[in-house]
Length: 302
Image (cartoon, rainbow, N blue to C red; front, side, top):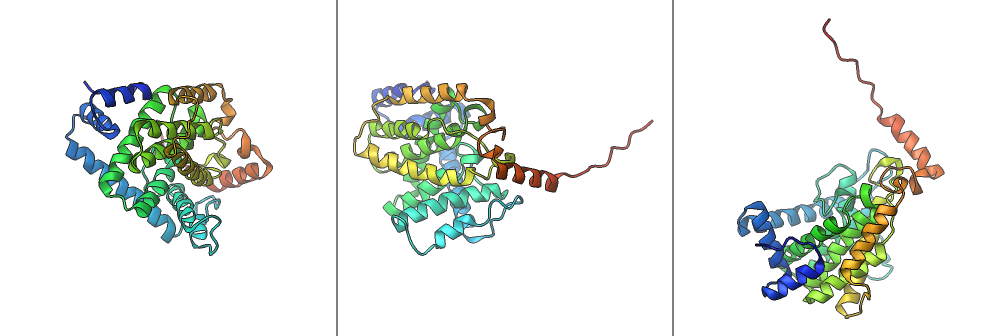
């Protein structure tokens, strides 16, 4: 019987007792739950990563202006800016995370990993990591399986939805998934992979979901970029064996507790935070008036 991803400690114990890599445990789960062959799962992962790469490319090469006007080719501006704050690689990471998320905000095709609102983080991280370290597509796919296993536990013990746990549950979970995948792909051991997840959660804990005008644009797009950066810092810290101190399962439980106690106005309702600022309200009013369509009454037979 496959492991059902109740917690990270159980995943570790199952992996070690069965002498399996982390990704192999997830593959076993996928085969069992979907009644599919491994080749089918690998093909699905290949397709998902292809969509991620396409989203990054699209966001950096095509017109990205949302109907609201809040998104206006920001990824390309960052990508083409002549002066790098830290390094060209960091600039690429940020612009790619922005790019994939802008595609989502402009109604393009993305992979919800784990949600559409956080769809720029894993593409930005994995495309950049693959380029920098010459990773094979197979290794990236293994990393994606690891990230999927992380998501299974986060969903079970906390949440992946902003409407349930705030933005920590969406961009926070995606960043944790990306950090774990990065550490795995760079040869980290199980403890280091899970430590990266714990560190990331600690960094993202408490982040509210306050979309301006109820649209997944502001501050969602820039948060994808910052979450990608946090994933990288967490991976770097974890690979150096710097402890998160608080065990990963306890970090996840803390995220769940914070999400449950968070007020409803901070959970995707656009009734708090940035959405309720003077500018946020002005944008909301303008967008609402712009998008209202008066539909004719349906004809009724007497």
